[in-house]
Length: 369
Ligand code: MG
Image (cartoon, rainbow, N blue to C red; front, side):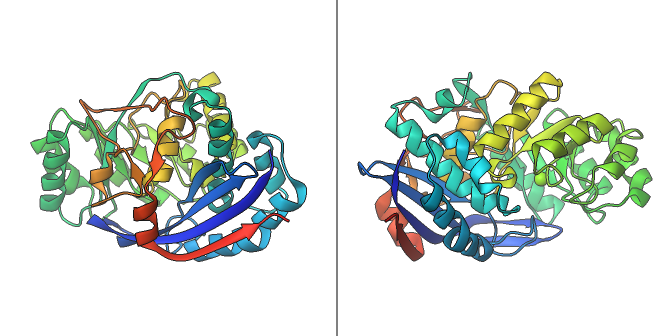
């Protein structure tokens, strides 16, 4: 495959509802949309899911832009690839910067799927025609969290994730459980605790959460293993798993019994799939995490979540959960808690170029001479 041009668009949109964790609040979301165009004019799209500040991982929109412009695009143009599965190995010559790599790698997968007339889901081995949908509540108060949960449950979501921290845990979850005794609830701590909080975390066992996500250090697997041995609630790792090797180490140590796979966090589809395949063989269920993303990343997530071991509802929600108008159509719709996996070529969604242009802040095109 010969990539002739790559267009980077830094875009910005305001979330319909601001999203809070103990690490901060996101209201205005920026991201980078990557369009790769081959010599026949066929396009594939990817999205860099890094935030504007490094609260989730070390990457930001600006660091990703820098890495793409100065390193990954020149490397891709200089070396070329025959198949999208080669991009991951090529980019691995340069360290980390997984979200920047993922945006470009996933655009190449979409282009390849477009060219071969297959859906991305089928191309990568997806087996599900529809996927279960979950939603994340990032609220500052229990009253607001309950209000948001009621709204989401009325809209058909079957699983709700809430953000917790030592300031919002036992009493917060107790009230939520009182109002919603039978709803599947999981809690994401985004590394808000240390091992000294083990009793505090053990107290949460009574709420029968589906799982607790990333309670300890963002790069830890050792202490999570010590914690899991004392908790009834299953631990899921998110931030700690950025490579296949991390997943292998975490499973071997017993640091978690569930893994949240975000293609953006792990450098793209190739590594996401390898972690998925390893977890399937190891009987570790996985689910697809969200990044308050735009439509391109959500479309990729739907394809990835159609792989057979994505047995737990992910953070993949309807478009109208986030945006007044997304950059893709048709809008992602949740019906009876499920999202249909598109069957059209590539990611299976059209890019709304009028909307993309409207929300573009910076645009740059690179030509492969
Ligand atoms: Mg998380």
